[in-house]
Length: 105
Image 1 (cartoon, helix red, strand yellow):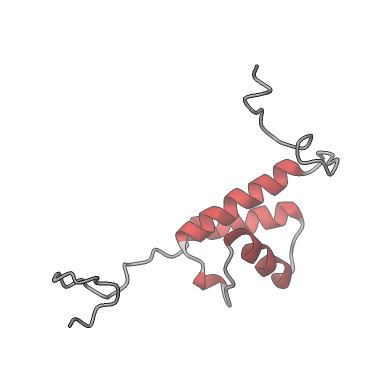
Image 2 (tube, one colour):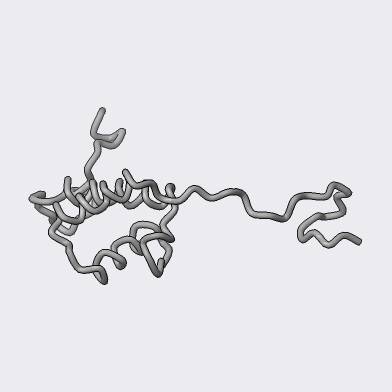
């Protein structure tokens, strides 16, 4: 019997160490800071809440943000900036941002 979880009878031994995780770069950090500034969101509590919304994870400090999560935050903040000034009707169909195949007919 092997010590590996989910081996399903495999004789192969797999390395159980997690893959190297790339942390957020200084450039990503500066971009996120600038985007929050553009949105007028200065409070750390608000910023952490938005990071949680955009990544689906809760972090305790900025240094915990991975490069891939930082990229999701950047994209999400850009979307929020793009949405500023756009009126919303509350109707998802009317408020959609891209044409659907029906619109292209």
